[in-house]
Length: 163
Image 1 (cartoon, rainbow, N blue to C red):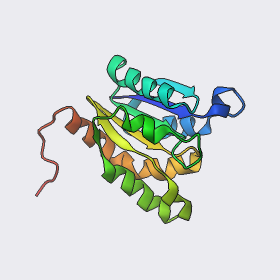
Image 2: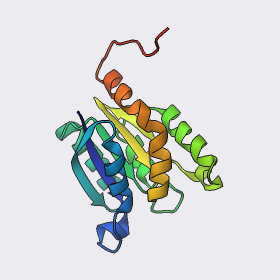
Image 3: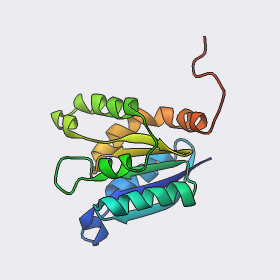
């Protein structure tokens, strides 16, 4: 069972002015792994808070997977990619590129997504955009690789491809 943390970056959500539909969509979709959500929070779009939460979820809570939603665009308050890059040890650009590639088939706005995916210690961190529709489109792309990716991060020696 994969342990999961969900972080929603939303100033309005944090203040209780908006329902967090994106985080709930992640929670619904992630059960297909199978996975269990062990932590779920809505936090403001503040780089330092985001970085601290990511570190807490990895270092203290030892969660296998942290999925974030929100803050991946180009507005001045969109700082999730920078906060994520500040704490990951290795980036997984292929995951981010695959999400943007598939999203571009649906909207040209996908090219302004700055979502980052990466590894901190034994955990996988995936940034997703902030709308439920974008969460579905992006998470659908990487969902089939998550279990294998986490196994490899944790040191599995199993072959990646079968001949």
